[in-house]
Length: 171
Image (cartoon, rainbow, N blue to C red):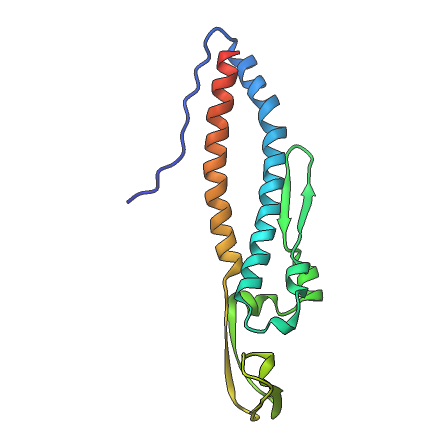
């Protein structure tokens, strides 16, 4: 099934078309920018919740969740928002990419780890021998939250445009 592009036809009744468009722009941009900031904040919280609920090692803490933040990168003539500063993630939670994408690794040394660090199994220990292979499953928190944000944006922007155009057309 082909993607349906969003399209909109605007007609102005009794208003100068240029003034009608200027009215829309005057209302649309500030409100849209404010809503985009809200959606970015909601997305940050969604990412944090995806990470929290997917943890297999709750003892690790919440460093990754705390490092993922919303940033206003530009507010001149529009709004540019970033979620998750790569420099900060690499510096403060360098494992962010492994948590998202997963990884395969081979231990370089034999080490003993308490099982309560990664399983709900009392206070036993497990030995990982040098050269043993391990797989970390990624949780795709970036992909999941990006898809959800795209859906929210499509729905909310369409709804808002129709509402505002109807309101302005009546006024």
